[in-house]
Image: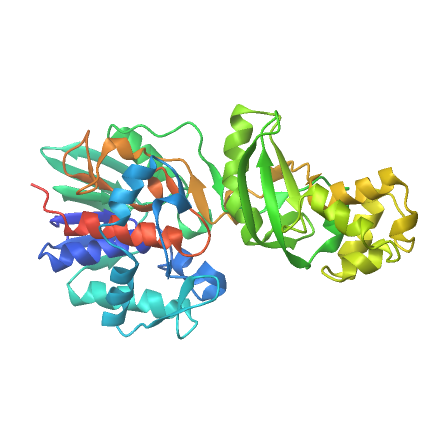
Length: 407
């Protein structure tokens, strides 16, 4: 197929979904992907189980472009539509306590196989590895080429992803294609949903493998609360991971760009403020700091907290000097973490930044600057929380692009 009706560059979640729906509309569709095996991000998502979507999805769980624009896309293909689509191909989804929806098989391969069956059913041709190295425009057609040759098409869907997990094929080249075709790409392209790095001598790096529910609080240099997340936090040999750290990572990076004084704090007793936690300690004068903390936290973590506060874990709380007790309160409730970086695109799940939605006609995902070009998925300036939100963005934007009638 050297001149299809629709050419899709990138056969990940968004690209496959767009190809399927373009095929359902009767178009001849060719999808090209540079990876040696298809669907790498689908197969590794959710620990290899693929959290297909979330039970409740709205624009509040996304960042980047305006919430109103994001909402317009999401409402065109919602969670119930996603559930129905996969059910058509024998993939039933189950809801877990976190709200994430997984295939009942607990195998990501189930999801990828369903997408490939759906694509085959409507005659989509998928070629890989076919790395695209250049995209141009000639005589009302898009010209896409690489070492493998050249293809032309009157309609092009750009679904190349961002830069997260580059081994999957998302190496940022799609941004260059977008610029070549007349689009702007924000200056700030950074990893999102990415683990955070603590200083090399930070005591929390000794706690690798411990996970606890915690609240992370992002504050400006003036102390204003910018963002908070409550979820499981995982201590690692390099710093922090787990849903709580991943969710706040992009907000930490975005705030730091404008305010070098931005800081991240951790609250290990999220139901408490400094004042209420201090009162609890005062009301337990005969307990030791270690015994009191161990009632809710792992002992290794408790000992580190006592050490960080500079007090004897076996002393009686009632015998602690006021400043020692206050130091324990601060360490447990508002301790600044001193995050010094993140683990980069190799370990990120998604990309922060991209082509702004104001350059896209949201009813079709068609470019406002290049007729016949559509942009979907992660290449756009939209990134969601962990838990299936980014897949739902892929399904929604892919559905709109594939279903659209483009003259």
